[in-house]
Length: 176
Length: 431
Image 1 (spheres, each protein chain N blue to C red):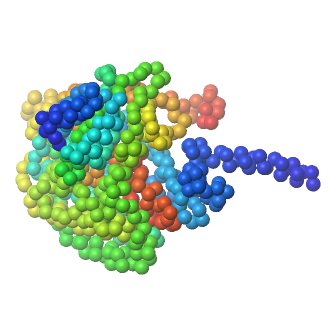
Image 2 (cartoon, helix red, strand yellow):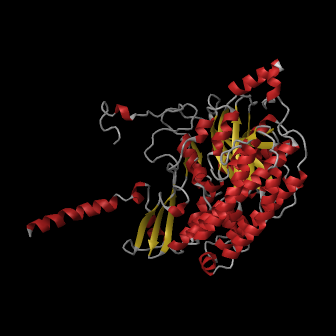
Image 3 (spheres, rainbow over the protein chains, first blue to last red):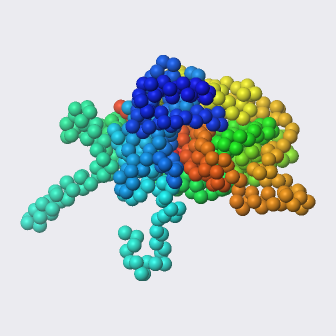
């Protein structure tokens, strides 16, 4: 992990290279995180991957989270790892909810990290975060024809209607 | 005569319709078309898309593969999963922290101790809890037993896929001894809920150490038996040697970790690189392969079983006396005997069981080395007694992306072998 001053230095250098790309940092429980403007996510990831002093070349994980009621609502976490130094840094793209039927959009990092393909599909599947430039953006774990984004916080638990067998006489053909 | 004509007239459009309604079309550009475009083939060339699974004995679960074949050669492959998705991560958001533990165990149902450790470790990090030394050793013992158990299930079923029937019985014989040990220490054979936030549920019972030592004494000779059956087996060698090789760089790009990466020659193991628990105090080696073919993957896993036995022996020798769970009454249940004498203990017991403990706001990612690679758990806490988000980076889920690279331009029979050596657990993939 970069320590707290190291993290600030990274944020400073990123902001020098691209104005406004890092909007915040935090360092807690021994883990470092950069909170990033979603418009510049590819710039940040590429910089962390390719800058000789950084070399975070392994994307260990990609998670999505819903921070409702906080704003911006969504977070996409990239757990980057430098294997030689055994250092991790987390990048969090803070995505606002455009509201209505519109989906929040983010650039896909599959070009930089091919491992993100399934994980971005998972984030799309459960949170409705659309990844621009993803080669094959479809639902991955939920059924193809599913409607809704089930892991958003405003999606109710047990949000699917269950039709019991005893209701068959009143709702004929419900199983079709 | 006329009736034949009408039949033919009606079958042709129906036939064309049926072709257009293949699954390949429904899920997007069909692999056939994609391969045809990439390789400049005419569509008429003999590419056949077949469906394998979801119910197929060699997919180790409910995995479906769309495979494009040219004769017997695999030209494209698309995994389709989600058949056993049960929304565990969503359900975790509705449970108190301590009730999440048995839930996450059921994701990757072969390596349940690892799921518990990933989750408990993350919550402990959020709470800034240091767990007692004895609990760390007990955890390591159970984790490594679970690793042997997981590799035994893998070895038995994979050898079965390649036609070695008896391996299955030998492996499951030893697996059962491990399950007996789990039953002795935790009360359950599988899904034990043994790890708690702050330590483990209970100390090991009298006689457990003796049984575990007997197991550790016997296990190396059992592994010798497996190796005598497989390592120089002509059929096994022909099926695994030089099959499914993917370069180390490509594996790293695809995020592959665990024995698959080590078989390709990258000595990356979180137990060594970033030791958690008491792994730093134990002496063990990281087996690596050279080529990264199926045989290397087999050798790496078998050697890992030997190393795990060594780790268990050392942990058993070095295990200190002392408490097995933290003394923090705000997190861990008070001992049973205090309930009848201490009012405060009774209150805390009641609050812990009904509401659970609260975790200060924050987020953390806790990676550990599971039998399949890096298993990471993201926990986002919002200050309440329930997590705001639990997400697992499941190694099978990520590793499965490498299957296409392993199988491309190989025989379809090797696909079975590659999938077996990948060791996916569909419960972990679908969650």
